[in-house]
Image (cartoon, rainbow, N blue to C red):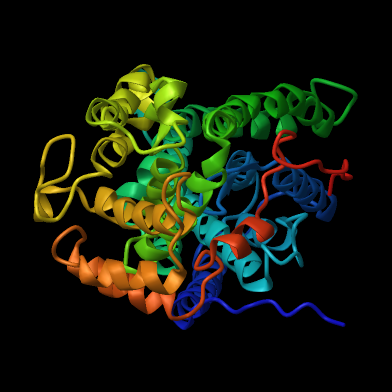
Amino acid sequence: MRLKVPLAPPKVLGYIGFLFLAFLALDFALYQFLPRATSYHWYDVFFWGLIVLWAKQIKVPLPFNASISHLFIIALAAVVLFPAWVPPLLVFIFAFDKDFGKPHYPWYKDLFNRTQNGIATSLAALVYYTFTQVLPLSAGGYDLSAGVGISLAAFTFFIINITLVSVAIHLATGATFRKIWTENVSWLALSYLLLSPVSLLLARLYSADPPLLGGWGGFSVLLFLIPLYYSRYHWDEFVKLREAFDSTIELLMKALDAKDPFTRMHSERVTAIAVDLAKAAGIDEIERKKIELGSKIHDIGKIGIPDAVLLKPTRLTEEEFRIIKSHPERGVFLLKPAERYLGEVFPIIKHHHERWDGRGYPDGLAGHEIPLWARIVALADAYEAMTAGRPYQKAKTPEEAMQEILDLAGIQFDPKLARLFHEIWKTDPIWKDREVFLQATASSLPFLEPSAPEDSP
């Protein structure tokens, strides 16, 4: 049985096809119009091809299924060593990804990555050739051509690479270029460009005459790859910091579940509903990730509510309800030290109990004064609460809860979002029925239900 891999949207496939043809045309032009006579052997090409292959194996994953590796350093070193048409082919042929063939890395993604790296290398080679052969630079008797050439070639590679990747992400997810830059590129740019002189150093080590180590320049290159390998940990640690941050959010969510087991899986179900609603509203993937984050911790302020009030099995008094109503602002206060990382979702935490008619809390915002993300989570939160029930209030059926949301559209809820929610609800999503959702995504917390140990995948 063969695993069926879904195709990318036609516009993405068309974009990849266009880039592939552009790559072939560019490399042919480099072969046809730039000098081809350089002293090198087939084993030189094969050696650098193997280093390209190595660089691809130590990539660091980034958001939106992107990644970064030292491939650009190796490609630029090849630009210095070989005729301009060779490095692009070297990168295209040898940049084999270890994930090739897996469901998350289908053939068209592999073709795109090979092609965009080939194009970036082609244009970098053209720039390097221009500033070392056509427009050589010198100052005070010093030849600056190689240094300026490799710096501009690196800049060209970087700009072409991030532009082609950003367009692909935009076509696939709808994310804006500004958001793609913020999530995937901005923190990389400086280290990316500062590492570019290493390419010139590697090329010089390889072509040194006499060789610095063992009678062959390749030994010097291999030795230098050791510190280069460990330099990737700067990127890796940044990504791990993000992962640790996500784990902290999960921990906060579990802590809230532990405090109020009656509403277990509340945040998970609200998150599932909110993400589906955001997608139906046309919100791009980057913003949906923010909504997902905010949904998970929208009730985090309840950690600061006394148990006697939060877990009271009977109806709340007016004073007790006033305390409960403080949880949105308590949540923002609690997370204030992490504002640098969570500031974008503070409006969800603070305003998910506002109403369309202005009679909500804490600020009594009305209509479009309420942030869109908060309006989405407010609706998701209300549906989950209605179908979950409380000790003093029987849970509504999905049909009863849906009808109440429609009745309160334009009163409590954004009417446009209420209509969208109804359209999603009619497709029977997994979160429609609470018991079905709990069975499918049951928490593994020991106090909720026992679970057998499982092998790691």
